[in-house]
Image (cartoon, rainbow, N blue to C red; front, side, top):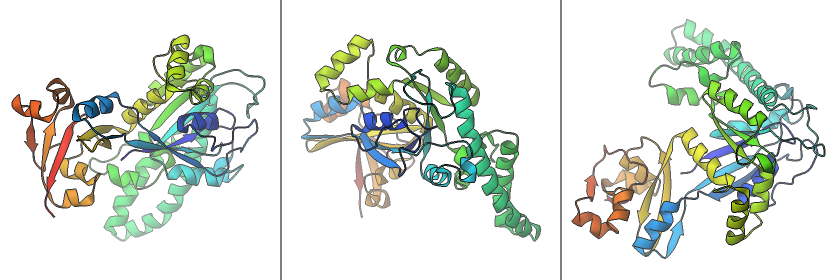
Length: 365
């Protein structure tokens, strides 16, 4: 699996330009006025991974299939969105459907591009969005809590358990903090996510900068970095303008352009890696003459559940996972070499798949 990451922020901060660059399409119109994006645009992009090419070369694969992730370009939020201002209701509904939030903040000056708040202040912009999301969560939870309290009062166990989670979220929200700060009882993390709270989703701040600041950032990105550190969030610096230009170039031209800017790689690569860190995802591989393919799973996934990403039958009839660590596969030039050097393992149902594992599942249905 990949992940579904919503690109959010105030209008005119560069969300749609970044989306267009990431997906190498012109699916999202980019214009200098609020609500240019009305319906959310969704783009699947391949996850760049150098390991895939190296594995495919050794396995002499006919095809390479990277894992993919989805970016969702969501309409710009404005102050009052939690009460339906602008496209507020639609914006909030779209955010509920994503796994993580890439929160784009404007860290560049440009008199030709209007800022909806009239000034460049990425921290204040982030606070505006966070406030609207918190208000929406508060309203949602307070409504749900009314009936749950009545049921919990008559010893409804399920209601009492749900209320415990809601009260934990309400406590931090009422203190002006996102729901992800809530202290959740051990073992109930999945139940908490089931509340579908907007502010429970992990956040990656994407600082959109001018070309000159793409390498080291600027004074505004430093402020965002400090804010992200305080929140335990991730942060990445990207120039949407550069990414848009890169998306129009050939591979050779792209490399040359990056070198002139002093950049080692496109911003997309950094964004994806930060996204993986954010959602604690890992990649495993299958390799053979037909194809070498990357698969994404949550960190901590056991072998049968990792197999289910390929096909549900693999989990249902799981026997074992024939496993070679990526470094061993490369060092010993494939499966035969790994076997000869004792690096080929047969793992059972309890095995936790590691990032980079090259796997072949045995199953019987």
